Amino acid sequence: MSKKYFLIGLVVMITLSSCADDFEYVPVVSNKIAIGKLIFFDKNLSNPIGQACASCHAPETGFSDPLLRDVSEGAITGAFANRNSPNLAYNVFSPERTYNTTDETYIGGLFLDGRSPNLQEQLRHPFINPVEMNNADIADVISKIKKTSYYSEIEKEYGVAKTDEELMSYIADALASFETSKEVNSFTSKFDYFNKQLIKFTDDEKKGLSVFKGKGKCAQCHVLEPDERTGKILFTDFSYDNIGVPRNEKNPFYNQSTAVNPAGANFIDLGIGAIVSQPEHNGKFRVPTLRNITISAPYFHNGSFKTLKEVIHFYNVRDVNPNEFATPEVLENVNRDELGNLKMTAQEESQLEAFLGTLTDHYRK
Image 1 (cartoon, rainbow, N blue to C red):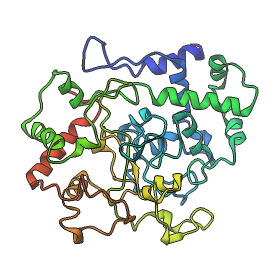
Image 2: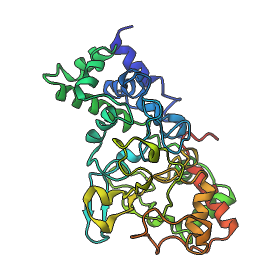
Image 3: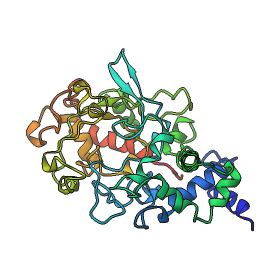
Image 4: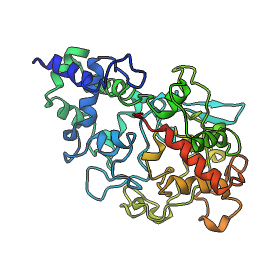
């Protein structure tokens, strides 16, 4: 079998069944997607080898950390960044970062702090980040790509690159093709089938949806309106918010070398506020999608909450029982309007959790 048809086969293999069945999907056959998938799972592109994109963003956990760590470890043993590895699925639909003057919030961008304006630009960073894949520079990445079995397929698909930068743009494009593919963003949750009126929710799931739309105020940021570009419900408006998350005192980033973390244990994560140098946005992070939320623990930017039950309770009573939770990491700009005193009963908290369980992909009857 030629490499070309092998690559196509990689995509075809993820087809689950006949497209006549509304519970299945057939991914678009694309060599770019297949190449991107090979790069995404390639553990030979780090320094030292052994770390792939999938090491921290695995399919079985909604493309988040498969080991459910507060903060993922880099290619070098003991190397940690300051953030929890986010679920990559569906976040790729985030638009380029802009400022909404009406709502006084930034919208879109990649990474939890929005520091990359678009997907192709974002995909370059992990390769050369010392606490992720730890390559010295782009030239180091390119030298490894040229030794892979699929390098010839990159040239067939994109042409011969004249420079390292041009080849890196091909790599980023292939990765973006994979990350925006149906394998990563399948829209196959129980909610999707319920929304198509193909199945019914349990009584608790229905009541949980009502709480989500009403008393819980979840839909104010995790919107239920279809995205204009995709026509799909993404469960995020890609805005930024400081919800009063406390420090995670067990975050291993506090113990990193001064070269990585000059502030040591005094480090404060200012979110997008640090990126745009605007104090009025300190402590704000991009609203994540809720798709696959039940399988992508721990939660929030620093992994400070271990279960979804804890998260829901925090949203509900943060301002009612302040002694139950540690002080917010960033005290200014905390959202006091849409969470903190939602007056949900314990039963409603449980029903909301039941509804969120319907957002996991690959649901089966």
